[in-house]
Length: 280
Image 1: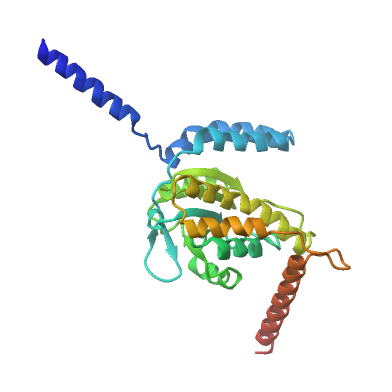
Image 2: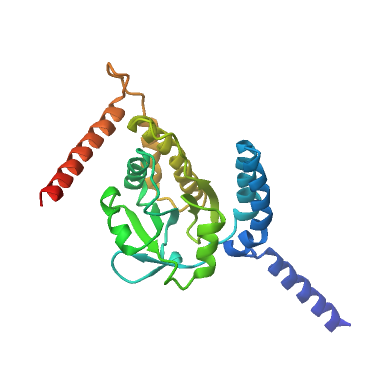
């Protein structure tokens, strides 16, 4: 009788212990379980031109089924060096999936560059191109050195299952926010706007959208006590010191003027390079 009682106590103890352990659901398993029904419903929404419902369906899929899953540990290729596993990135991860033929908003990359320059000590910023090495080389100069550009060629990658889910199930460009263990905190579509939008407006639109993901990652770092006190103080001071700049005769702030000037310099340099190529 005593043995039965002891066995019962042990069984109860270990049963509770295992119940308390988190079940880690892979992203690929979660998306596979729900993508068919999601595609059927979102196709209906688009056919009815109900964009609000389509947005609702995407948010519901992410919130109810994908957030909290763990991204599969697939390989990506840098321009130089050996392939990298996703979990080799040790910090919280800000991951954008794209392709060389995708045309970003005129202010998207400048906004991303500014965020990466400011927060790269706390977050790994990675842009993953579904493309070839040759096409990626043409993009390098557009991005900050604090953003890691990598590519996946479906024809040669060994992780075809998860690659198929990431690229084709939700589409791209898409942004994934993950903690240090590659647990998904959120997934967000890259915002789009009309091609006639000015650089200043485009920058503001993209900065506001992308910064929400950065804020989410920083908040998770803070909640886990992973922010150094100095870093935490610096980030707090930055927020305190933010203020509205005076506007010039054109209605632009100092920051907006700086963006416009940088873009004009970029255009002049690009035109000069193109002229040199034509002359050669």
